[in-house]
Length: 493
Picture 1 (cartoon, helix red, strand yellow):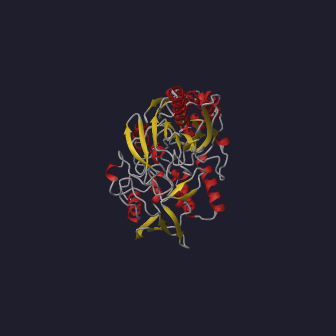
Picture 2 (spheres, rainbow, N blue to C red):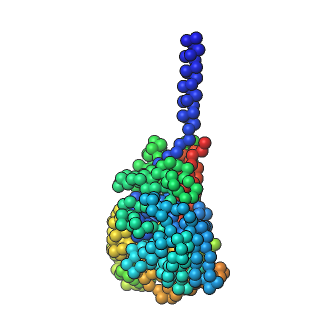
Picture 3 (tube, helix red, strand yellow):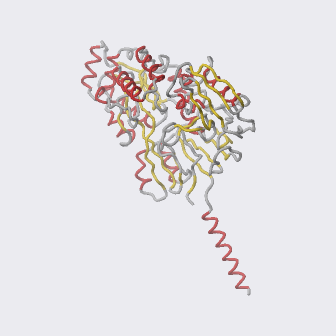
């Protein structure tokens, strides 16, 4: 009898242990290289904010899907007037912000009016420049009137800069983001991590995960160590591509290789001598060996580009020949421009590996033609303040991860300060053109114009390299926008 009791107890323990072993994991710790400077996606250019908050905490009227398509978000449907000027949005019902306040048409009006206001701090204010009026029809209906038709309007509203925020919580949004998404902000330990928890009252399909932690690890070696030790469940945009073969060979992990919208450029300050001379900019472009940068900084991952346009886009034109590697031509152009070499120029490099590693390679290439970059490694917040906003630089390396963003070249006050009235007029025509073939031709002209003006040196399309534990499902393989959407992420049963 005693023996039987002991046997039964042991069986119960084994059964319990087995059930615990197969219990599905409901939390996630995911690594990112860049930490956001603050948590308001509507008032900063830092893509790192969207990386944590887009779709997870904040939502817009429309949203990007994993394939880059635009679909419904907080607006479940819309009607467009025949003249293309009026968009009438029907809003999702029963939506609440994470602080319990109700989401309605007033919040949409507040968000869009704030984004387009004269004193707006929105980094993509141009997205909203065509809005002439936002009208609340009733709590579930909002009407947006444009000053001219805009074939990109629904696309623009899907950006992280266009998410809907509330007047009740706007004051503290930079440290306590209050959105409508499937996850709620829980905690931010600056320099370490951001914690999210599932929104139990989410209006749409609930998240599978109970909680998620974004862990910020800027050093590639530390990122590798953290994954190998299984301190992380995944690392999105893994910064050490040289380690990918080790993960590929380890059954605990899988490597996901995708693409981003990230045109990686060596930006030149077009209003700062000597880069105000197109011959000098062309000399820089011809001094650069793209494949050497791709091999040395990204270990062979990435595609060469010759203009500011994604190669996977159907309207892309391969213009790499316009800025082919030709150091002798670079030297001749510098001589023609009257530049006495060697000439020193300030090069600022933000933290990502493509910038720091790529910058060292580019600096060596430029020295071969008489240009001496003075490298300053800066943190992301400092880059945004002094390079992006302050325009205190000669050269810098950055990846532009916003989708279809060639229109930034139509902004003379943008950080590379390219001022071409003809290009600006072309972008105005693109904005109102609805015929796909005509738009395609305009995009091709735009790509060629900036390539021939050597506005920047176009390097490569940034790959998306993600390492994850084998059982993790639902991460986006590609990045049609800078986001780490966890709303569909789950663990294999």
